[in-house]
Length: 275
Image (cartoon, rainbow, N blue to C red; front, side, top):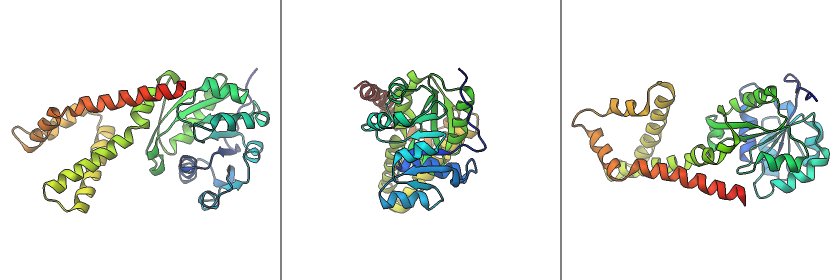
């Protein structure tokens, strides 16, 4: 049976779970003009979260059932511990005319589809830089989600950063790299700033330079079309300061440590999604 297409001009978007990620996605979608706030819904009883969404024009209901009854595309953005109960509770209200989306970490499509009683589902793994519009998001289409459904979700998540498509079996590794990765880089920024302070810089200056340097390097890696090794070679002149610093990083096992971090986080992700 053919799926009822979602009308991109009129569909309403609902968030089940009104946390930071839902807010980041909703704000991005509104700011980039993908959807007006009048077509977005969520539900929450707590005043701070209600006000956060209402401040940019999103309708906030009192309960999730109202969101499900009013929306065509539903994004589940709740904590992994409660997602099963939430989806099961709403499943009688869900219809095959609706496109369901999950941004819940470590929760498999197979389980989501079973709890929802339908397989028109798409799983997305975004990351916290969604809050500033530079997320790395990966999407995987469930059982009966159509190509058009996939394109629609790519457009929505394109409003908060870059989007890739991948097989769901890669999601534990994706979690270890882009999901947890921002934290590794925050650690690196903090350590670079400490290095600046150790070398005599005032703290504020060191912090600013460290963060901006990481931003600049990432922008070059994204936009230059050059391999990161080439970019590194371009900075390191013979017998200069950069190669002296790189030598220390190599002695400290910098690369191996980062590789291990991604592998360890992926392994932990796999354990969590099996439990």
